[in-house]
Length: 360
Image (tube, rainbow, N blue to C red; front, side):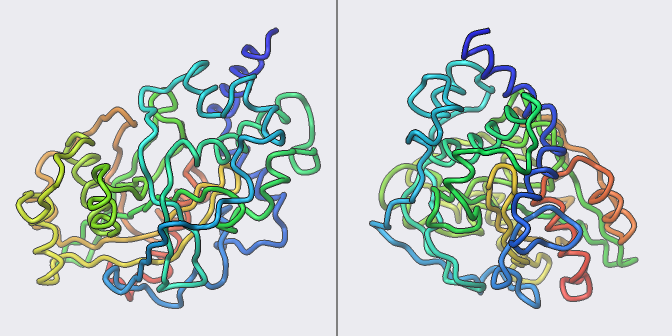
């Protein structure tokens, strides 16, 4: 077999065994905090004692942050690049998913605790793949070769070290939003889930996830847009439109949010209390080092049905399922018995813990 053949075999194994590989990966970090009942890594300061209203989360900007210690372009990652300069280049050449584009992202460079500030600087989607997905690939290749995933020497993963340290690698973050459709007549709530398609996405294919979820990034490329869109709510609403309404990912620039119907409707609902949005914490996937801001929105049922009258059930990224009743029993079943992403398990667990505070 050629190096390319070996690489493809390891990538197929990764996409077919992400849940089990994540369970193995977390055992390499016995000294790091975890969100109880999940494999999601975190830090004590990243878990507030009560939900934080999204408006209270503070963000800061750093034009010229220190470069990360590991980028995935050095010799420590040579074994997962199949001769290509980066992991993203290998993925594009050898097994490209339908969605693979190097868009500008915000790179998290500092997070001492919540409600912040979360300090961000310039980043790119491929920079995150070159370490995160490459680390996952490295572990998958080791398991496929019969090596112990906990004790095997993994040069890239070992070089990165603590995956919750923003200084060790390009920390691209996503916002994972648990969406609760709340019926005030009987106090019940339910939520949709998303099964991600491994042939369509570069990350977390084959796993379930809450939705919407999206990389924290601006809607455009200009410096003005990059600064104006350093806003968690704007990012979340774009993901709502893309994942629940089937809207395209490309936006005119400059983009007028206030004249955009989904944004106006959801923002007005926040203003008068028909929608509540909270940040519950931050967590890191032990397999891919993907770091997610864990959020929940509680949307009054009538408002939800008006804004999302016909949910898009299938997208380029996967298939929507549910609704699932938001009960302690259903949360426990999903977290313990389904192949759900660590971020999804974490936000469900935290929302269940705080259900009285969030009013779900």
